[in-house]
Picture 1 (cartoon, each protein chain N blue to C red):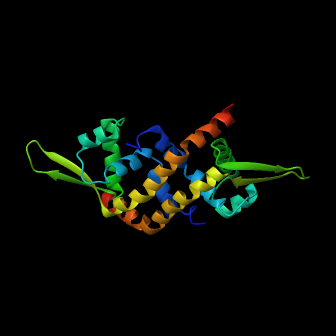
Picture 2 (tube, each protein chain N blue to C red):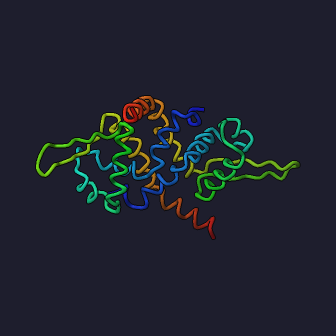
Length: 112
Length: 112
């Protein structure tokens, strides 16, 4: 069953950390400096952003570019692989936007 | 930014547990008994399946139906809300199927 085997599960494990999806989504319009990403995302600490960017880089989803300037400038951008994940992430985000209230209502009923 | 707010994050938190996606996906063709789900999914323990089904029920994504028979029979099926999540889950699973090798290759290069 395609979802139980490790290949398909890899995508869910990647998105098991919600910040991975948030940061990938925030890079969909082009390269960004970490400071700009923090402002754009809001609610993410420097530490978590750095860890997330490193994890995304490790998985080949993001590319880090350092400019030999003074002071040094660093930008992150989606790789082709990272860009290919933006659409499924968007579909999931759109689902949440549309159905979050129904889930929360179910949680309230179940919790009541 | 729509992903940083709690509503959109709810979908990712739901799928942060990979078994949620696997069990929802396994119910896409109709009601199933837990024993049949275990065979279909493969690699999931009775304990994890029971916890997952309960969690999905709590979130309004799955409905439990008990039949007054001897011995008692129980089936689980997707609610409309649960069914609406099957497509984004399928999109993510398809992405993994197509790109898992590229991710694993990037992990090898990064790990080398």
